[in-house]
Length: 364
Image (cartoon, rainbow, N blue to C red):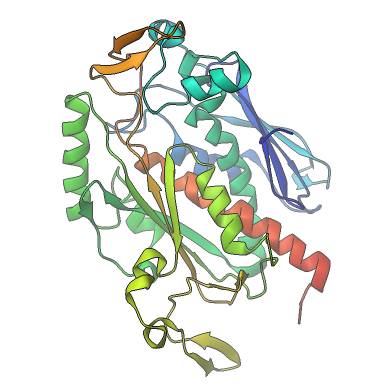
């Protein structure tokens, strides 16, 4: 079995390599008669583009998506939707040196040990370039959720290294996130982050950080106990993104500092809705959404490929020093924002369709 697919009813299968002819995704389970065009997908792909700013990789790809199947006269047919993005900007010569050397903390070693072969050009199948297909599929999931429930999914850069923004997730707007190139909804803190990234870039180094995400207007009842809990599936989806090393939802690890009397979210009635006064649960209780905003955070490690001398080993087992070349993000977080949003949308859309199949359109 391969790990190229995600979801059960809204299912995606990702394919391609970083420097192959094309990359793409196949989506199964999209409801029919749903209006869809390339324009609906392109917006989020443009937010993920390489070469979009001075703090991202200089690789130039337009990432123009084409719909190959599953749409007729501007509406989905219920058949699998196939999306393709052609690769244009190849520089395979940048990777000749590392084709026989294992980059520290990269997938080079583990891929070769598992398969006995690897594609060294841009990381091949292990490249973050493959997230473009997931973002494209996530854009479709976003539109379904928006049309059905008015769901908004907003991710933003909360922390880079030790520079952090303290903000109520519910107050964050998409406009605020997109107001600067680092996608932090505070321009003063964003400037500090940008300067730090530029310094690391000039030093041939890299940085990590944390992305926070909030999903508003998510209906109660999404999630499948015991092993397909909504928060468990969100964790799996986020940890499937390149360079992720941690996931927490609601209070997360900070919750261990509280007593139960402090951490519990008291219920109250507003109109005809049952809400909670606090949201330490992060919108999920018992693995099922409770109708409150879903709030979670994802930790990203510093980019593995850096232009500093590092001790490594080659494929023949000889110790060697490596100073990697190529075009790489000094910090993946600004471009990872739409990836986090897209992966969250895929999980929520899949669980919505599973809820509908089991409980009917309106549930209990």
